[in-house]
Image (cartoon, rainbow, N blue to C red; front, side, top):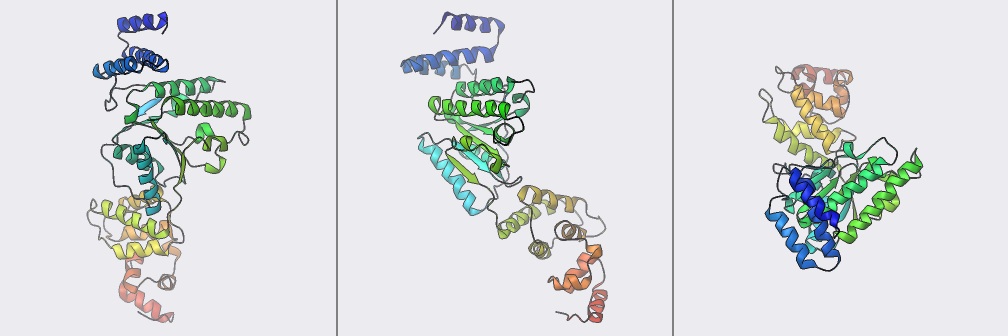
Length: 355
């Protein structure tokens, strides 16, 4: 410990700078820990915790780079069984406390990566902090590197590291492949800094959990991929999985809309008829918008809008085409808004056989 550490403590105390005082005290504690005086280091950290300078569950922690996420009220996690098993595996790995603590979630937008990270923090009873890239990335040459180093210094100085999860959501912005980057040198420096800091984190802090998400795994720097203990692929939704997720959203949303007749059978048939369903994030928005934009005077207008969103334009789709897709006369009546007798007559004229 240097004289400057003591002077800094006095300075921060006089200025009533709690963040500065806390960080300096943690730095001193880590120094004593590094020279083998674990008892004194633990005593200092204990005093910090008791003084409420920092508690993982407090909402007054402020940082330019780390923001606390609210994980108290969350919807159920709708993931395929395979991915859920991996999520359970992550929780088990963390609880084993053997230093397996860095995880990369890769997958398309809306596949549930961020929500899974939030649920993992909740199930581990940990506070979740996410990295604010708006403050981290700087247009000045070399400043982003300095900011990344400062970020990891903050992470390494967080006490009660066994009660914290750090989320690098969409880490693509600072971790794309150095070879494919437009500015190879700058991206190389940034990625090299992240590599160094992750290695340093592994040496200093084996209890804190790091989760990063990426939508662009194919462009992700391969050396950085190797720094993570496990890569979880979120692109493992079957069509049945997506239909199940859609049903959950539909049941959750439809009860809030008056004047709408719930037809789960026709809702599912539209989903099954669609050649390709979007992933949960987009699917959720599609279902919500079809209900919200529906005509108040038409109890089945949401089904027409859902068909238009997922399959094609009903205005240019013949009744015979709908019948060929497997929709019944009654279902076509709901979709097209034409009387059942009219639908049956048109099909009869075209030689279609009624069910």
